[in-house]
Length: 139
Image (tube, rainbow, N blue to C red; front, side):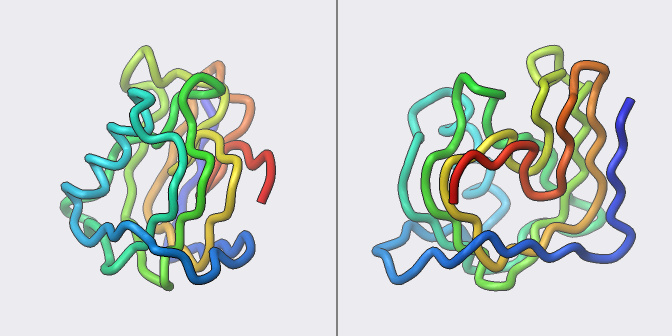
């Protein structure tokens, strides 16, 4: 089992999302809705902007956004320096014992100015475990 633990905060900058007409995410429920859309294939691309910190140590975000190479995000996600608090267990759901584990499983795009805090655990099949994403193909 592979573990990645963030004791304080990790900041990842993968470029600049630029000035787009972005869809805003400001609550835990809006992030869950975004993740659910990516996971079921109804959201595959777009420009998203985080407008507030999401979750906390007592109420963290627990989903993996994307499912390996099947459904994943191909867009821009601007964190605006905000924090997403996570506790992600890549072994908790058989569908998520996946090869790429992170806040995003795999991404083709840009993640900008996002802070991720918490812990991420990969499973036996998880060859790539990262804080922001397990695999970045372009961006």
